[in-house]
Amino acid sequence: MDYFSKAQIRSISALVDALYPPDLDLRLSEQPLFIERLAEGAQTHLDSRDVFELKALLNVLDTSVGTTLLYGYPSAAFTTLNQDAKGKVMEALSRSRVGLRRKAFNGLKRLLMGTAMSYNANGPGQAPHNPIWASLKYPGPPSESGNVTEGYDFIGKAYCEVNDNDTFDYIIIGSGCGGSVVARQLCKIGKCLVIEKGTPLPSDLKNVSQCESEGMCDFYEKGSLLTTNDGSLMILAGAALGGGSTVNWGCCLDTPEYVREEWNQMGLPQFAPGNKEFSRSMAEVKEYMGVTDKGITHNGMNKKLIEGCEKNKFKWKVAPQNIKDTSLKSAGWTCFGPRQGNKQGGGVTWLREYSENGGKFFQGIAVKVIHRDGKAVGVVVCKSSEKKLSVQVEDSSRQAQGDLLRWKPSYASRPSTFWLQELQHWEKFAPPPCILRHGYLQG
Image 1 (cartoon, helix red, strand yellow):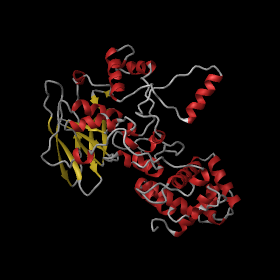
Image 2: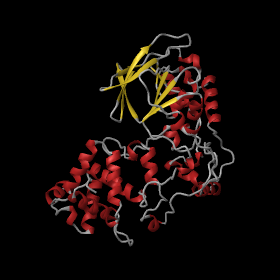
Image 3: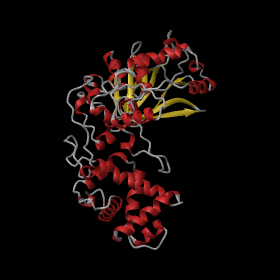
Image 4: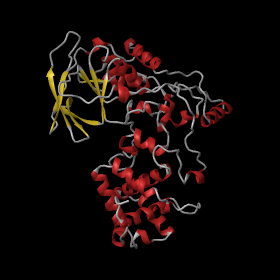
């Protein structure tokens, strides 16, 4: 509770009562764990600038001068207004022509109400319960037991602390849709390390709660609080082992011909429409990830959509997807975590094989890509701990099968730069689709 001052807590209480009117036998501002969960989310997922702006805004709303400046009309302190007056202030901010006012409204609404609607009042790891759910008639996530795909102990079998004398042939930055495929291919021909800053997957996937607050905090960038610079749009980007493939929509569509032609016009002829090698690779990817349009159990929303199409004689067809068992209720909560290993994302397909073939992971560090003349030429690597990782090239000699990269990491007081080498002969590996830009491999 010490994270917020008394003035800031008064503003938070006034804001949540304005956004969620206390007329449903529940006063959200009086819920004992709400402020605590809000503080935990802000501490964990907001950077220092975001925290400064949030606390400054909360302080402003506890004064008449600050509320007047923010509202644009003479006003008492927001924390002293009645319910109707609070609503008018919030509505004015949401519709203001001034971008900063709209940003303030959007930021407060998402942070406060996102926490209010999703937090687990029982605490992390406990059976999900939220005091608002009953009034919304929301049942919460299902509690089905058993796994569709058995879990895998990535932490015990594949995570490592890199030592001074370790060398690797390849480093893959990120374990998402691109990095996971590349990692699985490269581990067959050399010693690999995947650097991933996101959340590891638990060894037993049925322990993924699919509680909204835990899912959004654990599996998304900035705990799902990432937005555009002006705050007008939320950006839900996966941040876990497997990246977006772990939590994104299960629909799997072929790359459209017009997109392939755009890439072709950008100097990437391997993606050109009609290129058989690309089409073969795409088919291999879909088969490996269990993509199918057969045997799908539709949810209530899709059943209504199908019913409406048939009544109006509209044509429809099933979109291929990679949920292994669509009859399970947990399939509809995949965006909050890969419970039971049902979604065949990178964490249960490409990366599992990568690990079984000796591939290693270094988790919990962010990588900054260095660009020179529009090209990615290196990275700076820092681990979020007392130690910082200094990465240096040990041997960049050219190998027969292409340009292999050997690098020697070591811990030092300051991070240094890791220079990538061009992979001019990458096509000899014939991997499944990945993005190849300017001759550099991007994970």
